[in-house]
Image (cartoon, rainbow over all chains, first blue to last red; front, side, top):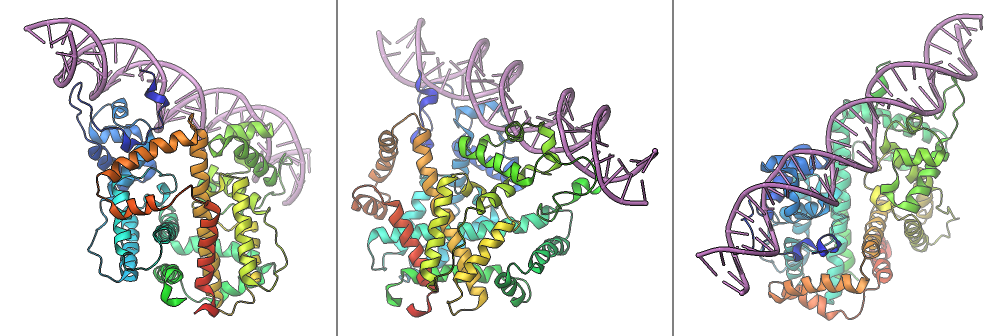
Length: 238
Length: 238
DNA sequence: CCTAGTTACGTACAGCGTACGTAGTGCGCT
DNA sequence: AGCGCACTACGTACGCTGTACGTAACTAGG
């Protein structure tokens, strides 16, 4: 008794099943899959305890037998999509391998556009997160730097991937959700930006904006950012 | 009529005051300040329309005369803390200046720990955001690269600052909010991590974890990340 | 001066996370 | 063998959220 709510347990530390009582109707994987299905279809805001329960065909409160807090449901979701990572055999070229990892993470995020919004909050190292980290370290085996530096590389690279992809997804969804076309939305935005620029208070910003012609190639910007981060860890470039 | 709700207007584009009717009781700055005060004191979740209205001493629904959606309130908040940025005179040493900018952003975030949670969603360029961007470009004047590259530098650097500081704040708050001491929390976490490691499935991860002795110096990790990003843009290092 | 566009704000609604209580189930211990 | 308890299941209910809507007071433009 008593320690029911007081425990800040990482959900992964609590056993999925203890011997006693009726057999649980679902596994954690079932629940995670249902939540992911909903998030993919209706966005993260569609993931409510009631919706997930409905998707599983059980009462709302029954979920709390599996997931102590909603936050833990998010953790399950992140772990679930972590399984989509392909843990390929390292090629011996750490740069190419890490680039591949990053592109794959981006692809996963584009497949599950709610992931970036969840990333900052998720903390406990889930099984699949640990597997992915291990895989990255395996890819970095040929890189001749201390182990601590390698984990810093992974952290920095993942951070950049999440930030950039999250931004790209957010802008894409913003224009999509509006009852406006992208051109109109852009026109409104640019009209405002133009009015600001016209004040003359931001000369350098104005120059940067007007200099660039045509729309930005988000994929190219992303690639360049990755390359730069990798450059910063490459001993052969120092 | 009619276009009341349909307009996806950036809040900065809508004029603060139109000539007709009674004089508004507050300015946008008043509202932003109230919201910031609440967020600083009670966290971002304490910022509800009712709370902000109470802080201002007005009815809840009156806020909607100033702020069409809650999302826009967030935008006001971000702009408000943007004013805390010191727009110093560029020294001529772009690396030093950008380092200073980054450290200052980090300091602001530590002062307003809710900022990182808000950053990914905020999109419309607020006045103070524009001013800060202009200031960064001024600092980068001595750097001999295309203007587009400079904006990419600013974006990448800001992203890294937000990610790292957001993580650091999140972990700090997690241990604080718990009715546990940091040691206990860590013990629980490490016990789980240890149990995973004991499976032998993560040899490289295990090595990385056991290799490091003592607690991580978050500040040093942050500094190193900044330096690396700057390195990646430094023409003298290529 | 009048009237249309504002501000102010009380009420109300749908939806959220989840605490709590109750009923039923089946493992482990005696 | 059978008792008891830990577990699952889930309906109800509470406090909270954002905000749509209606009404009353107010003031600048025609």
